[in-house]
Length: 125
Image (cartoon, rainbow, N blue to C red; front, side, top):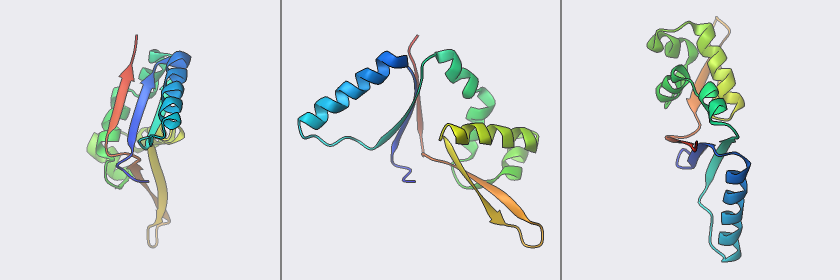
């Protein structure tokens, strides 16, 4: 994925979604190009906070470059299984990407990388 794509995580609910859709439609009607962006929208700011806990945000900061799960866990001083669960959750929301690489003679290792160089978190309360 192109890391220059704008990546926003927003908690603005249904109204925010339709507001963004109307704005995009206006721009397209005028013949303007839309900036490439990915937006993940939460209806409730509390849900966003549950998904993006302090530990998961630390994980996002550490995974800017491709990293092994074990190395991330060691750097974060956390259990490998807990980091792996957090990666699964973040991957389900599209915030990170993981793949498996061969570990000669020892099976496979999981490599994790963020999908964007920078994330914008917005919550309207």
